[in-house]
Image (cartoon, rainbow, N blue to C red; front, side, top):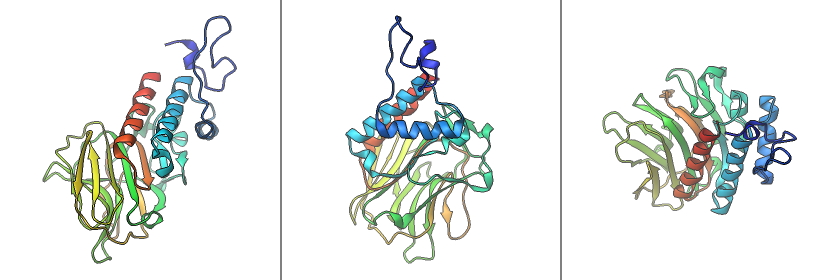
Length: 279
C-alpha cells in the first residue's frame, strides 16, 4: 500500500506526489459533503482509500436509483472514531442511547458491536415517516452470535393487527423473520451469523421481499398502517418494552423508500470490502 493512499483524502499530496504518479480522489459532491462532516467529527479526514470507497458507494447507489430511496442511513465503518461513524449519510444522526456505545465497541473495518444488553441506536426515524407501501430497512451484518435478538426495527403491539418493521433472528428456526409494515413476517433461509446484507422492502399492499446471504424471499403478506415508533438499530423498539438487544457487529444501516435489495447489497458489500482493503 502506497504512502499516498494512507494520507487524509484532503491532504495537499493526496492525489499523489509530484513526478511519481497519481491516484484517484473522491469527486462526488454528496460524498465530499459526507466526508467533510465525518472529518469534523473525527478531527481529521479519512485516508484516500477509505474516501474513494465512500465515493464509489455514492456513485453506485446513485446509478441504480438506490441513493434517492435512502432517508436515514449510516456507514458504521471507515471513520476514524465512533463519533465519525455516527455521522449520517442522509437523514438525522442516530442517538447513541444512554451513550452506551464507547470507542472500544467500534472497528473501522468491521463496524459497531453491540453488547446484547444495553447498547443500541435510535435512528430518529419513525416508521410512519415512510409510506405504508413504499418502504425498506436494511443492515449490513459482519458477524452475529446470540439468537432470539433483533438486529433492527420496531413493533407496535397495541395496533390490531400489530404493525412491525423488523429483523428478528430466531433460534427455533435458525432463520430471520423480516417485516415491512406487516403483521406477518417473511422468513429467510437458515442463517449462521455470517457476514451479509439483511434487508426487507415493500412496494405494494400485498407483497414484501427480504434478502439475506444474496438470496431473496417473497411473502404475500398484506401491509398494515405503520406505527409512530422510531426504528432502533441493534434492537427492536417494542411497545411491550422488550428490546431484544443484539450483540451483532453492524457496518451499515438504512431506512427509507422501497428499492432494489440486490442493488443495495452490491453497493454496500463493495463499500465494506473496499474499506477493509484500504485499511
